[in-house]
Length: 242
Image 1: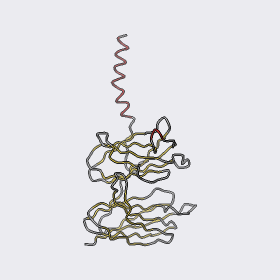
Image 2: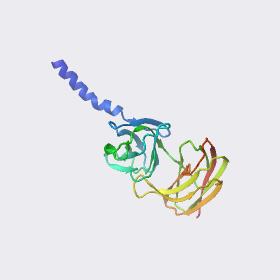
Image 3: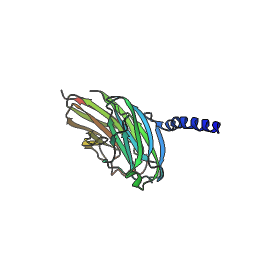
Image 4: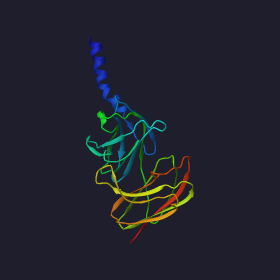
């Protein structure tokens, strides 16, 4: 009996360690997979955030299934308080959360569905932690994407007013360019300008007011009707108007 009690006590001591090991730590650029079910409608992850970083969490219904119609993301700080979520964002089969990290800490990411326990959307998903590239003043960066890959994200931080120049370098894919501020609702963005069209090859957008970060998305337009995979190579540049 004493041996059983000792064994039980040991297992109880180890239980928190086992539970902690089950929480996956997200690494920027690595895609993890999971599944939302009616029994397990919240899947927990974590990442280490550093002050001033702007991070993107992108959750999508798994390719080929699209059964998870209404994914949602909740972001909790080290005290377990919700600091951002996607409940105010509009998305079909995907949820995108944008967040400026205030303090260094491990943040908890909960991949879930609309209405949580009361929801009915189920299915496998992918989740990625993305660190958008910061565009330096007067420098040009290049990128590439297809109509079947995820959106590309960038950040501009300028004390001066500025413009953004988009230049499509090659390819038969014509993505749209969206410029946004970080939204008043934590986790969201507020769109301030869009350039799109099936002949969009070059555009200068702005002038934008400096003093706060701006979030740039290169993405497939809502009414893009490319039925085969096509590619776009592009360049972005931000120019201060001092």
